[in-house]
Image 1: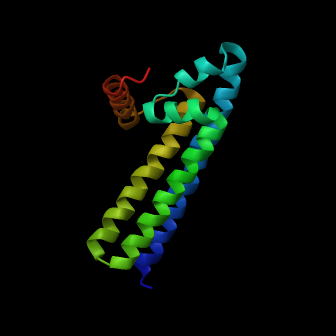
Image 2: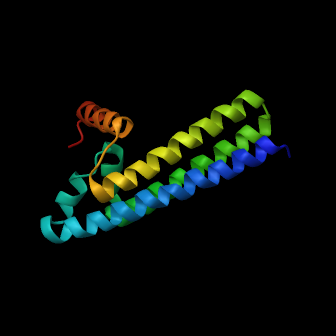
Image 3: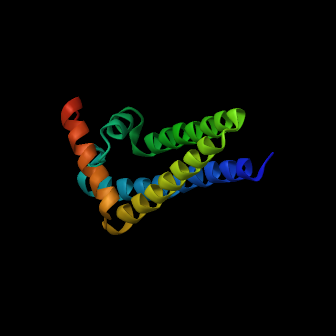
Length: 138
């Protein structure tokens, strides 16, 4: 295996593991909010409409772990597919994608903890609002 293949595998693992930051901070916030507002209101605070639907089905903690499992599966399958084709530019693209996912996971954890958003996560929040309106998910 070439060095770039190792980097793909490491970045897939990092992108998957940083999702744990999101899971831990989301579940901690949801438990705290559920005590004061009720579980239904805590679920409605989730910005991602698809995540909100998963939370309604499995609860916040269960939904976070379902999302983590899906996330990890996507990272793993993508890494294996890219390694199978062994195209250099595809490897670079996937590494850049994993870097973006890692960045977003870390900033989601920061937002969940402090309430601060940076421009990319703010634009994703606006996108989730638009998607929620289009899907009719409230």
